Image (cartoon, rainbow, N blue to C red; front, side, top):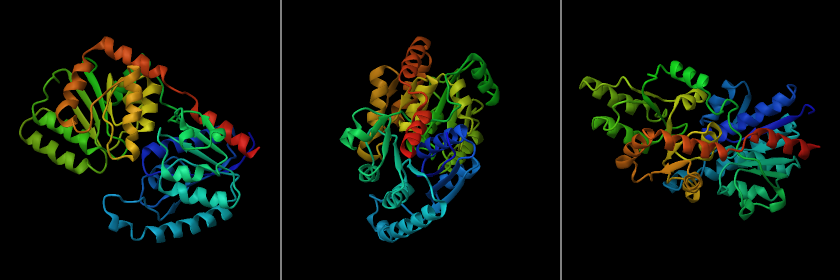
Length: 374
């Protein structure tokens, strides 16, 4: 592949950022001389994660539409106008061969201006229900890479390519050696059952409340279980306070490990017998790639309830069990712990998850990029 200049825009959550980084990694793998510039939203996690991965990023002062508090949208038109102007300046300065949008606040402004300037654009839509911004951009996009069938409900059929969602390259089915490495890395007891709890890159109040409630009630059913729990940076201080209160009461918390963020997710997946997770598109793709059985708690706070649709696809295939957000505080831990004790069910579910994986998504997307820019 010849060296190119590519802008990758989007972010807001790990579900957008990790696919973007996977695409960038594949572009650089094919030609290390390729120049990549990220464009994100100021104050969002991409402004930290992208530079940490070694890439340059420009920030836009943009926000999403706030449905809960309409008053907070008063400045949105001004912010959008400023972001469109800055996006046009970034494009003219960088002179990209292609602009790639992965979703998130900044993606619309950048791709809108790229299309207006005649730059080829590619959209990577992670979800089974396309966001409004991507739907608006789809008509002028050169290619739309999707992870689900029947996306012609939202986009021109002749522009759609089923590629799957790009995931971090280290997300692979666990070997015995990788599992042992994960147990050592997280200092887990090999004799116990291991449950990984992930509420997304920002955390989940529902999952955190379910786990804390279970701990405060004496950890019923968890006699030989060890927990690795990503509680999210938004909730870390609150969780710390409640865990400290439990320690002062003499509660044994040796086998419950919580942190704001889990950096080595490859080892976390490898050591886990079962995963409790939200059902965002990237989480689903990683679970399938790693062949991990899961208890899924779809977030109700997403467009068109698409996380429930994602979760049902795995449940129908026998790869996961769904507990609704409303039921989670009462049922989540009991359901997960019963399942974690059933080795045959875990093996069956893991096999079904692996069968649903679409490996090589980043490579397929970069193939489409090559076709677009000739």
